[in-house]
Image 1 (cartoon, chains in turn red, yellow):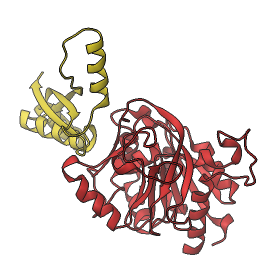
Image 2 (spheres, rainbow over the protein chains, first blue to last red):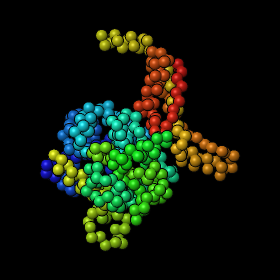
Image 3 (cartoon, each protein chain N blue to C red):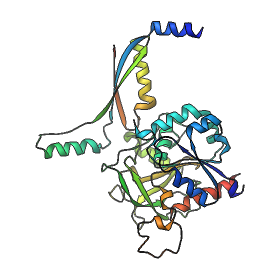
Image 4 (cartoon, rainbow over the protein chains, first blue to last red):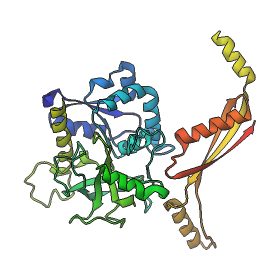
Length: 272
Length: 95
């Protein structure tokens, strides 16, 4: 499949607010990215006409009840059958920030055995409490399973910003060690918060900005086709989005976020 | 037939109010309660601990108390609580 034939659906509802930048990042790399409201997909029944689905960041349905849960349940009720087929055909799905919360609440991540209607993880209130909007460092700990990072060298450190109030990744406290082992063994752990030299945050604020267990910032499913992360790669697409853009000479016109978009496009091209 | 069925259903159904209280499981830190406790202490109160929870008050129709309780249980599992971090209690009364 040629790059320009790839169709990406950036799915929005009321409260989504990062759809434009996300679509722009894909369009910059030459693929067709369309922003669609969930009701448009329901009306036309055409989710399966897309090669990839993206849940962008924002505050879907006002973050009521729990971030992402209403979007997840609504999607399951309205498009559950098409979603199942989309997933069964291993078409890639990306969730950024609120999108990651949606994937977790839908039960698509971590998805150890099968899609779990009662998710085995949660993204909850930051600790320390409060909305955090800052640049963080991420270490790619994936060994090659994740279709969104498998062209990025293992242990490479990326600089990408976060903007969230509920990003603390947790497992049930009684099973956290066991589930972390599963996550690592299945190569589902992708990004961890670290300092600029790659040393893990070990839970310490502000390197780990939200208190996430094991400094987890992004995970994928067992097949590597579904990926969620709290940081916003679409906000690290260009050099001029970086905080030091006036004080540094930039030889690369792009930021680290581009690597993720580029990575999945290469894989979709080879997949079809 | 459809009209007849819904008539039977509404004839048999009664009104209930379910109060579902969702709170954090012990073992996970709760920054909201910690921050609140800290501030109450600063204001001079002898506070040892604060717990926070969210209460949903839901008016619903069901044919019996048992059915109303089962419905409230299902709502909690499907939407209102995440078993990873939450526990919940349900109290249903006839209106």
